[in-house]
Length: 185
Image (cartoon, rainbow, N blue to C red):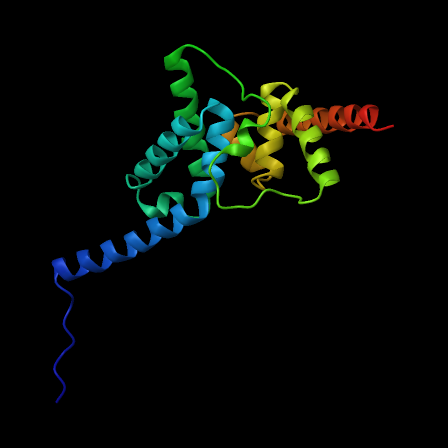
């Protein structure tokens, strides 16, 4: 006769949950640290403060049950990161933008796009043009094309309507096309 299977003790269950939560946290940090840091750095204009905000965002992930963020983890992380960055800016009483090209110097493991001179020049020209856009257009543009969020996800992150996100993206892209074409006849 086989002995009846035993239920894990509270300590064993807690140990298994902690290991699983630890694996989850490591995976989340590995996947989202670089894009969140880049996003926060663009909002704050300071890579060091951005890293602090991202660290705080990950700490806040420990609070809610995992089920509360399942299915929309990226939105949750970017929303919390955005709110923390804006709170920091409000607290300091000033908003400043990145100096030209400073955002690309944010520490990242990803290589810079484009290796040949023409690609680098085009990239630099586009960054200058993006930097000249209004801050809200820059933000939705980067959330869409740099981080791959849908209009609906951007809407949730920025607290703008989906239609407003679409208008901002349309205006930004229209302006970028026109300005780029004017620079490169």
